[in-house]
Length: 153
Picture 1 (cartoon, one colour):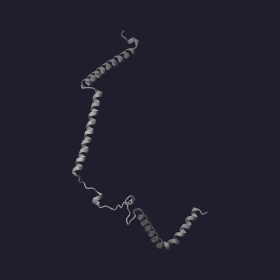
Picture 2 (tube, rainbow, N blue to C red; picture 1 turned 90 degrees about the vertical axis):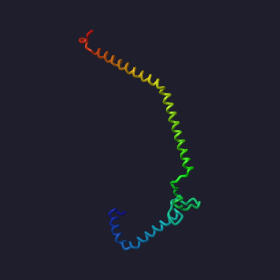
Picture 3 (cartoon, one colour; picture 1 turned 30 degrees about the horizontal axis):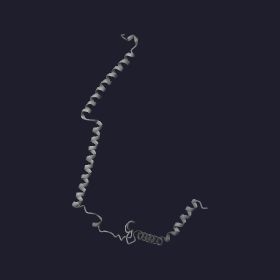
Picture 4 (spheres, rainbow, N blue to C red; picture 1 turned 180 degrees about the vertical axis):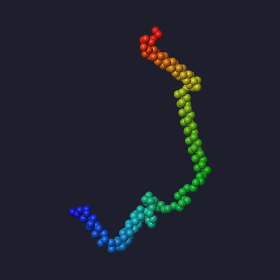
């Protein structure tokens, strides 16, 4: 079995020996690659030029179309414009209906204006009572922490 160093030495000796064959090998390799390319191009497109795989393969006689058939113009007919506008109107109507239903649901949850005002007043009163109760509690705790010699009892 050869070592890597022996392999490198053999390779260095073989390259100069093959140098006179380069003018014959390169054209043959290029011709082989060209033939392979033409073979695969014909397989893919079944014809003179390479085409996408799904184009002309179904057997329905598809052929290249002119650009004006491939791309529709930007013009729309009056009927298409009317259909588009009707679709937009339906979409706007559905959105308006959804917004109205959501507003009714919110009003049902929140109540009328008078009920909301009464609830806000009750919350404010509750906050005032809570503050007063918290203040009394802190004062009681502070009074309990006073040492007995400082109490005015």
